[in-house]
Length: 236
Image (cartoon, rainbow, N blue to C red; front, side):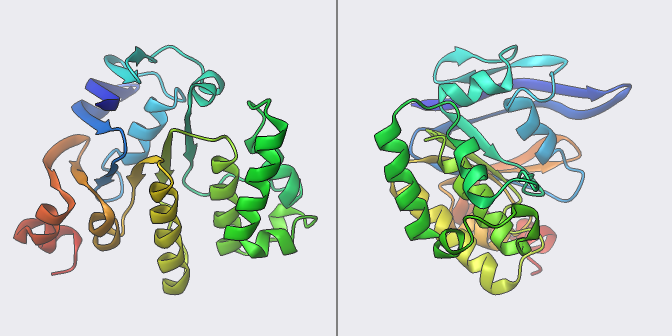
């Protein structure tokens, strides 16, 4: 069953068309990746889904409900959240306060306390630094905090925009292990990522964006084995 459906989406910035009639879906329980070069339209697509940009044409459905004109905070309440490109943590707040902000739509105090424990178990460094101002964390620690904050909202669909950007190879490996962990707990994932090798390796399906259009689609394994994809995105 499709948890997220994007149908015939166009997005314009003034006279410039950034997204051109794209359609794709994310089925419940999948990891789906959007890959493409810088400027291909990946982040614009994510922002349109989250209600941060208004499409000029097309429809977006989440769990069967059209969400084109629903404000972002209500989309989060519906069970969809995003880890944006560049982390976008609350840099003046502590680590703990950032995690609290992730749970702002929830009322289940016992569940929130349990999730704090789970996040700290998954990210021990966050517990060590829970009273530290988030803006003073390293880039890797900020990425862990951004992911932890998103999970505190208890999403059914987690969208991650370039989660490995700017991280060391060791931290990139950790990020992808964490993505697989969240998926193993039943979270559906839509991933935007320039590291095509790693993202396709964990994906059920993937779409290739080029100049605002979807130019290829297939399983992660199919695209990993495709000679054209290897040449353009995998360094082969």
